Amino acid sequence: MNLRNFKLLFLTFAMISLVAACQNKQREKEDFIKGNVKFATAQTDIMLQVVGEPTGNNYPRTMKRNGELAVTSMYDWTPGFFPGSLWYLYELTGETKWRDMAEKWTTSLEPLKTFTGHHDLGFMMYCSYGNAERLDPKPEYKEILIESANSLSSRFSEKTQTIKSWNYRKNWNDTTEWFYPVIIDNMMNLEMLFYASKVSGDKKYYDIAVKHSESTLKNHFRKDFSTYHVVDYDTITGNVLDQATCQGFSDNSTWSRGQAWAIYGFTMVYRETKDPKFLDAAIKATEMYLKNLPEDMVPLWDFNAGEAGYAAEGKSYAVEFPGKELRDASAAAIVCSALFELSGYANKPEYLDYAIKMLYSLASPAYRAPLGENAGFLLMHSVGSIPHKSEIDKPLVYADYYFLEALIRYRNMNSQNNTLYQD
Ligand code: GLY
View 1 (tube, rainbow, N blue to C red):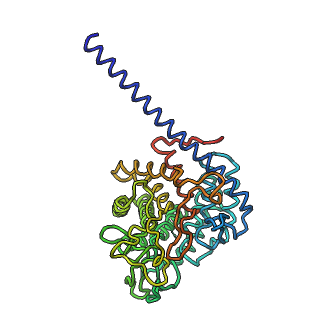
View 2 (cartoon, rainbow, N blue to C red):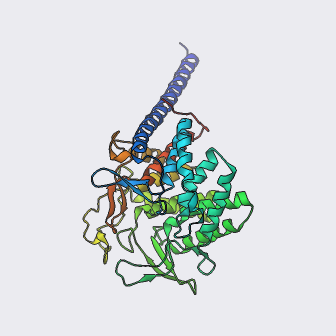
View 3 (cartoon, rainbow, N blue to C red):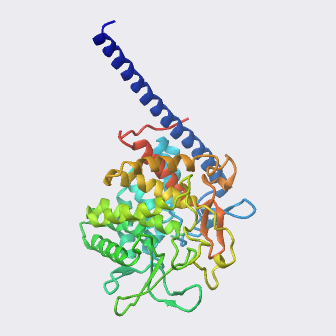
């Protein structure tokens, strides 16, 4: 064989190997998604049998100590996630059974459109009605979402340039009163405001969302782009009065889910505004988060719990709780989903690799529940709030919601692949 023929043969062989490797990778990905969808639908079927019809008081949230499903009323902050997960199962399978179930659970939340008791209306209505509008639009959904955006906007103050998250409360020491507490989580509620401006043509919701994001950028980040959970504002001057925690270990520590909300929130605000300062914030918050991850990519519930220089205080259960090492799968799921999106905006190809690693880690037996266990939830090992002695090392409905969203983003990656995964 002469040299030219040898080179040709070698190139052909290399090409064939490359194509085969790509096909194997694609097959592995398809199998991974298919397996997870099969599990998620079977597990959710089990939950639906237990939970029955929506009553206004039975939105799945977590698991009791005895292994039973724990539910909340619609006025808690999480009722939108279960309908949202049902919409995602419809998006993954195309089966009308999931659409009908999602519609039923979504429309049960309509009374919330006038709710103004706290800031979480975005989570409550956009995860439910927002997905409904995206996947099976109906004229009344738009109206309900615009009315919900109005209700949320009623908590905005021109003085503080933010939406008030919670009403009056005190810190863990009872030494500081918060009259205008804003939490980093609030970034997530803004997506509904951007939507409302687009469909109503009224820019006021957009303006509120941007002002809130700018204030958060200024007051919620430390120099290293870790986040404070709570910032309290003076309602008369608009000045910052306190930077503290409510669900993290200490005021100066970084609560990992708070950091996750910041990463997801600023990624979403960049998508809606294209303002590079928000992209920069999302990237810097991500860099800080990635630096603090253990090998399996699921963070500790707080990056600094138990470290020298960090002290839980007052009535917080974190004072006596020894579990520094507990993980929060919900934070991992939120960041996993966010990085699938952020990798498309940032010049950081490694973010996509991280997102895929996070997804595989969450889907491994270390975090994904065995079928029929975990009160019908998909993921184990999340933390609601250690300071409140609540939902410690438990499943959480929002962990499952962002896990399914990440699965969809993985499926759709690169290819606009909308393969439906049915049995
Ligand atoms: N938004 C409340 C939480 O993340 O626990």
